Length: 322
Picture 1 (cartoon, rainbow, N blue to C red):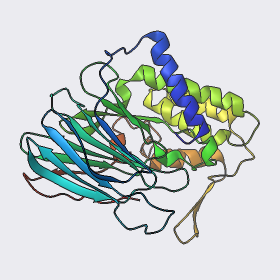
Picture 2 (cartoon, rainbow, N blue to C red):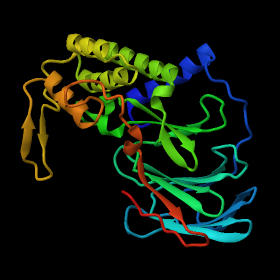
Picture 3 (cartoon, rainbow, N blue to C red):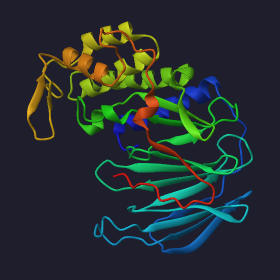
Picture 4 (cartoon, rainbow, N blue to C red):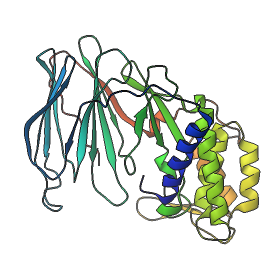
């Protein structure tokens, strides 16, 4: 990830999983992958089982022609063209044929970089379901966006990422520390299962705690605490997280104490950080309007931008999202 604290989060999570031996799936062979970056590709092909993908790609020079699609692809199943698409990307991207649900038919997973400061990767997933593709596309996600991993060895891969809406909310980018999101790949789509992975969540929360200690009495701690309280809500420990925040927040930091509309006009102003954080957590669905943890929160809407079905043998052009 691009954020310094997010690097720590990933490291702590990895250490937590490895140290305690929580999830130890068998090591699988690397799936077929095609990278595109500085070299032109013309009808480059990867295949696995019944699925074959043919890719053509033209690298950009500088930042001109921002609307021009420079990645084009066709997807074949058992030799029949079933989908095709094009996208405009910057710098680099990748397509992987990875079986995410152990049905012996690999999913086609594109991740493409859109460009921009601290930004952004879009995942485009094609999953063959009987006689048609289910197409899922994510919003632009910060940095590398996330990764697929079968966390509990049940044969269904999870997409591990974080809630991008916390970036810049109460601090600069480098001090933001968003809460975890875990989506399971099921029936060709992404389903929120974040709360099912308590050990991973707790490892991430501990990384946040360490970041608050590093940040104590310095700028940016409020950005860490916002994510920490949300993470504690997901762990069922809202009150504990809130009380910790009340002790450690920076009372002199006014970042996030007012909200502006797209025209730059002030629409809301808060007296202090706890008031602003509570309103933010309600707006983002972590708390209900009466200040209770929202046990029905569905975090997939922070990640999944579109989820559609492609009729048999139909052509497809996923919408570009920047």
